Length: 147
Image (cartoon, rainbow, N blue to C red; front, side, top):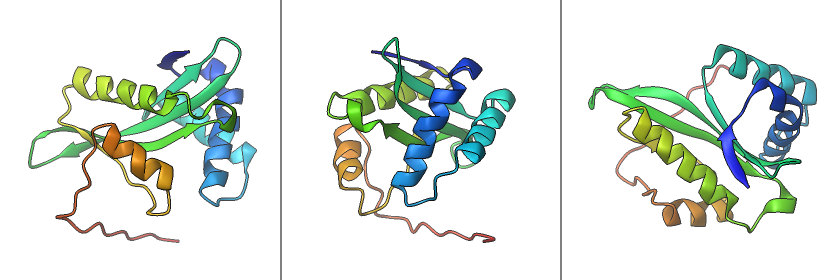
């Protein structure tokens, strides 16, 4: 299994994975919207997307967005999406994708990365501490949406 940066050539299979990821988070399937969203990310290069490639199919992906920490005066990465197809789970691909994200943090001179997951995501909440993430219990996370 190769972990590599996604390209426009991956768009159709990446769209399938991305739609599966959204459905897993109880969103309605929207292949057309997913394709458009990912096309924009890849063309504008405003996120980093890495895929697991077995030579025939894409097995999973992660997507990171750049942010900045004012207090640290450095780039900070948001690991926003991480998904492995059902047929490939249990093979350590999530850890490999996270390791690729860690390499991005190091090579970009960033101070770190963070992620958010639902409390009901039992798999993720076991995986992230094993991958070296620490639960930040000292801050409150607030959200405002226009929806």
